[in-house]
Length: 222
Image (cartoon, rainbow, N blue to C red):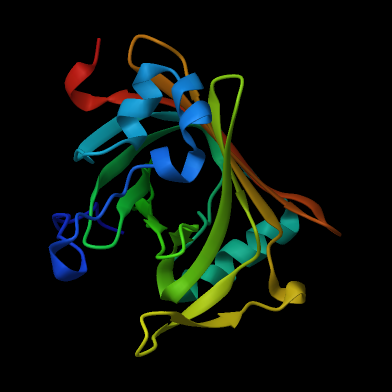
């Protein structure tokens, strides 16, 4: 797959209302202020387009996870189909008309780059949703713990479009088709670095996917 293309700019909401894509209101003021300044800058308003470069020290998947990842290539690779260690990667972040894109580009040697697209969107009711390829969506609980940000999935559904009143038509993904609970952690490691860790755990098959890596903004490499 190729790298991320141009990212659309943020546009005003209905009636010229300013659309906020930062997590301050979702998280709550007290929890927001407990985050390190660098984390607040990455997830606050205004959203700034930036590439974070680094590597995933570990990218692994269970046997069943690999089957799921292979099948998911048919709908745009919401999970990577390969595993490995010390995998170079770039996280492309930027505003879109809906929210904030966090697109992860994995660069295995001798393999075409693999791009996982996702956009964090704050819906009208204040719910944080991660939108993936093929209109697959993942509502998220977000909380702070010991200065780190945590995102935990609350099921999955397909977005079938908007109704006249602006609400969304949703088709829930049946439990037997779910990959399990996705838990993403964002830890600041000072001097411009942060750690991204993602674990996907199935209630029957256990750990499906795990990856962790360190990244810094490309323009502040040291």
